[in-house]
Length: 299
Image (cartoon, rainbow, N blue to C red):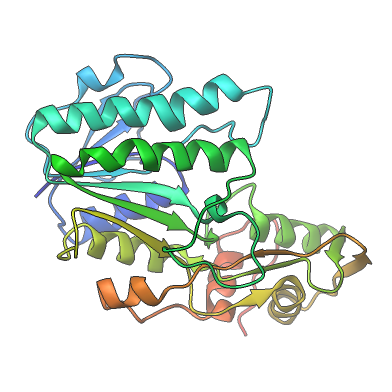
């Protein structure tokens, strides 16, 4: 199989390439803004920037599977970076879809986000209406909608990711908590809950993406939540981190409303057969081991 990966130098992309090359998943091309010396052996880089129109003209012919992980690195900077968010998350996705149609691709996986559902007190399922409340979520929802008509030409699968975490991650919830714990910084928790979520360890996410690249799909257009099986809240995460590090967190409870970002994984399990989810304690232990800012302690 010939595979094209965008966002291959990002957090999930790096882990995905390592798995694909280690286990000989096929011939792999990846899109990178600059030559990446750290690419695994056997991966062919395509030097291009998704922020520039016409970038898809540089892509090779004859690709079977497209795994579109790339997104704007400035996705949190609204409204300052709205043009970059729109260009990379929406326009570049459309450009890639048009290239895939002309190139005869067979399947297109889009990395979307569970944030498209908005905030719900219950688990969100793929059949639920979406309510994107941020520009980031709106851009991902737009990409999903734009891809749907292309199911006439290739299979389309939108992966709505929920809290992917693991070693090497930066600037997300778990790395920030680990850093604050290491520095003795204050952690705020809204109404004793903070956030409620079902995060998925990055190795599990990679295995799920691998399976979604080849499993038979019920229809030519599918949406699937990609999250973990455990539903947790912020105090639960803090307790696990305290146990793993031997440090005591400085917690302040606020009146801020709790946030719930939980996605049902029933369809995911049914579709892929994947049930080997990494327990939170094990996943956080492995994450801490890969974080330089805090000492390692094995439970």
